[in-house]
Length: 204
Image (tube, rainbow, N blue to C red; front, side, top):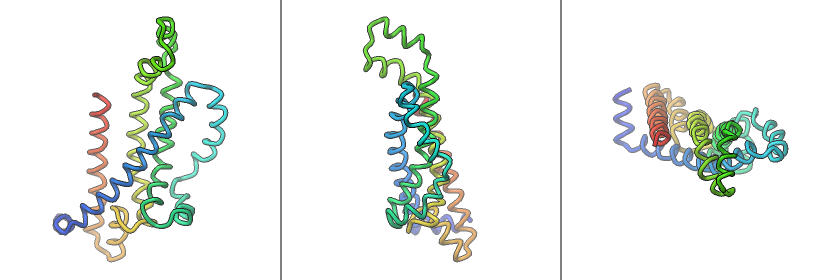
């Protein structure tokens, strides 16, 4: 395994596949945060929005992201877009559900106190609600990173010509167990590093 790691590292194959997977996870999680946080805040704070969206989202949430692979290949082809779409679906619901829970748990006394001191909607959102919901958002983001790796590897096994999942599948076909283990350990180490980075950012 060590020899395979050195060979893949010096040839540049490992770094190229790491870069491809990280790029897709970055795009998917940015999209998940940009859509999941505002929608989660709206659903958690405003009952009409929750009633409007909850049924539709509850219909799609139980569907595994990998069940979308055939449609994503038909719609988006084999490559980055398909993998990002599948990974986004996994990350989006993790961010959304945690943001909703955080918004619903905001201390109403803090909100009333800020309103009584003259805070408008913008200041109320920035100074009271977002700081209260931030821990839940970070929790959702950490969960999203974990499920992103699970979904992206499975998606790359089927729908991508690069990435760590593709590398694992390729070396499975040529019966190179050592290279497969290198790919698996690489995913574990990168996932651990991303989790530590997210915890550090949350503390800051």
